[in-house]
Image 1: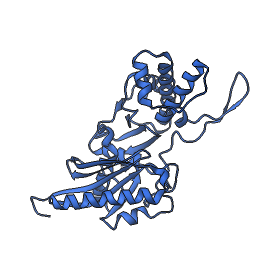
Image 2: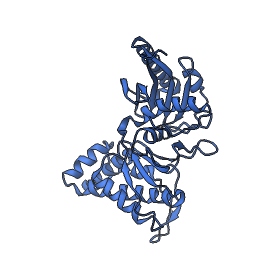
Image 3: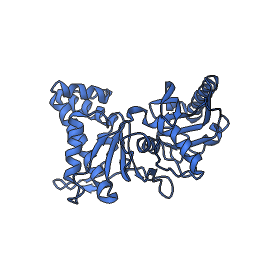
Length: 326
């Protein structure tokens, strides 16, 4: 690379709703040539992968025309990803069993990572987690997930599954009627869940059959207009999220919580209920006042983090992330 040539990597944030892609410069984290397309995962994993590969090729060609040396391709995926970059679940995007990392490597050296860990890398290097030894990153949007970051390194666990906080049921028994309950946080406090609960509640008020749910954004707008049903849905959703985040604090003992994702950055009643419930359910007195902050990288955290992970992996040559000054 010449002294004047810029260094960059292609970042891909492959979610259930959209694929965001761009060339990210290193070490600034600046995004160039940002592109967003629908994921449309119902078409099947191969169709989504074709779109992803096409985007990566287009960005690689564009970067080279602009004189940017592309160090690699990083892809953050809204699925479980093991420590070798293999997608091991198919909840939204059916890439399980498909050699995604190998296919991306035909364009440039590639790294496939869980989207929440990619976003956590961005926050550790460029964002709210920078300079913190131990923090928990929580993302709330279409789904809900978390990542523990220690010394700038996202903790993967033995199988890459240390991101799950909202997808499995909590079995309990109703103290009033004795019914066995299996509530799932993601089906109660995520964006689609908020929209569905609001639609069902409004139809119950009108004594009509429920119709297709709208969006979480519509619920937030209704709450801002004073709609009591919308406000209760947001309050209860934020409270449920706070209880689960407090459990993470009780178990992991972090210095701070960083909250990202579309809903995590929404603020207002949802955030207030979340923070209050979280602090109320933290057991230790000296942990209860820990900082709970919004992610600084915003909705681009996954894209930037996926690209940044390429550089830190190459620098360590092990796939472990080092928190350095950039």
